[in-house]
Length: 245
Image (cartoon, rainbow, N blue to C red):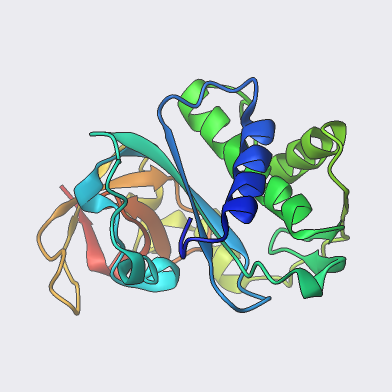
């Protein structure tokens, strides 16, 4: 955990994570928790599509650039899968109700209850992609499994999916779907996960000319692809900056 909390708080966190992970083969998993002020900054990310190494642990930009403040843990294995979590840790904010980005509403009794739910959600992704469990499960499936799992363990978490507003008609999506020959990125949309692409543009010149791996297929009207660079980082890269090999 970063920064290092009191021994009693660290013990409580370790027990919570161990309780949620019990029954799951976590030998290849590294879990990191950052305690950073900001009650609206709770988030988690599971790096589970490819192996991570110690030299790819830090992130220089994006929502996890805070990792550079705390450096690389000294005891990382040679390769691992990674779950990163960021929480405030201020118990004055509890109990509290929050909505996530997947149209779910949760209510937590305490900091440890929220930690349990957040970790269980990311653990679902690890179990799915690394252990071949939860086939075809997405973010809402991860929420559903996480809620049932932590409630069965006795954590004080309540949650429910919220109604999703019907999306407005997208003329661009309609044209792409029904007139694919008019789509300038049609060759990229047809690629499957695992395909390799070349970075043809990068304003920072960090990845220019490098080969990246497609993490998931493109959505119908998206102008970005989810790709992973050789350093293990995952990006939503503009299609205009990529080309097929």
